[in-house]
Amino acid sequence: QVQLVESGGGLVQAGDSLRLSCAGSRRTFSTVNMAWFRQSPGKEREFVASINQIGGSQYYTDSVKGRFTISRDNAASTLFLQMNSLKPEDTAIYYCSARFGNSGAYYSPTDYYYWGQGTQVTVSP
Image 1 (spheres, rainbow, N blue to C red):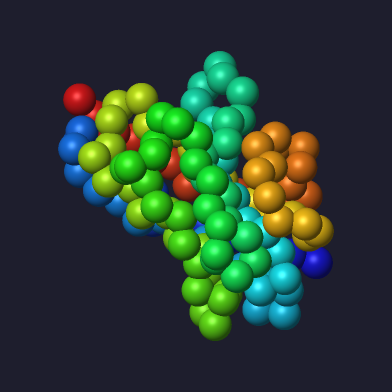
Image 2 (cartoon, rainbow, N blue to C red):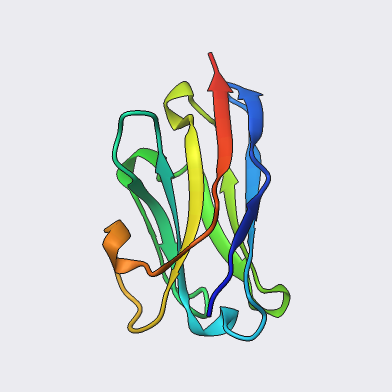
């Protein structure tokens, strides 16, 4: 079983930075591929970034490339999302998620089996 708990969201102004964290289950964290998704009101949940079990491969949606960085610390069982140069359109609930199996470019929410409760990120103009 994989339990995930996000933290680090908040209200910031455009151009500011935030770092999201996701604490995972110590026993299984290093064995799972991890990802961040986000969801705005009235919109479908969308892929933001993913990282493989050892942190050697990362994937990003085009709208965050060059601004967001996904990373993980397996010793601390924690996933991170460093968000720089935030824009109002980044406003959403951000979810961390996990999947067992092959690493690679998995962009659909249905590819991920475990989810956190989400953390709200609001970027004002």
